[in-house]
Length: 346
Ligand SMILES: [Zn+2]
Image (cartoon, rainbow, N blue to C red; front, side, top):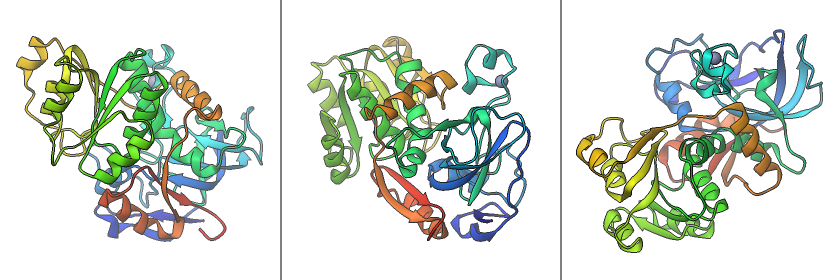
């Protein structure tokens, strides 16, 4: 089959498009003919090499995908050839203390398809049956691929871990990426007031169209001062920070007393000054979050099915132009998801 793959870690130039072995179907697994896959920043980290992750080479990245079941392995009961499916890429053991408690993203053997195992940037991918969900009626493969990873991440951050309640104020840094847009949409569903930041006026304008109440360009504005002004010096209840080093100090300053600062990533670096004095004095909860449990995934897919949540797709590339797609993602100009179309001209 044709796939995007690499045999050594490095930059995007290490990625090739061409023939690799078609993955075989193990017991309890399903082979899917990929129709669409979506890009995540994670792909660039996987390509660059992650500490402690030893990949079988050649490796195909890609953690979001949707397509049509081509072959259901022995023991598979929920799917048959021809079914349209979308992938939840979180692989968990199902047996450890955390899995038994329904906390799959805390699994001691947690893996992400495409990060630790062969991914979706290929004509076929294989996943365990429990990682596949029917594509809701009326939803496209592109939408299904664009939805999975970022919406489950934002849902757990805000609802499961962040305990967002109606009418609260939420500050989201770096609007434009998949998780931040998902967080904006989920916050608005609960009736929250949403403040967003970006270095791009164009992205702030688009965020306003999606319902953001306030947008600040951090190149031009004192974000903390603006947020404190709008909230009557109180600060926001929740800060969503996936930016890291550049925004961390602002996040702690903009949070209200007893507020929650939630992190799911650190695209500008993982080691900002901790500012412990602000954490204890304001009694801020610093909350880590990643991916979601299977029940949280089911909850957020229901909102996708009922069209209360729809991913924003910035641009679609054919699979054969995957390198250009990753260059585009890396440049950071997109508002929404970058998607690969697979099959036909892909
Ligand atoms: Zn487990």
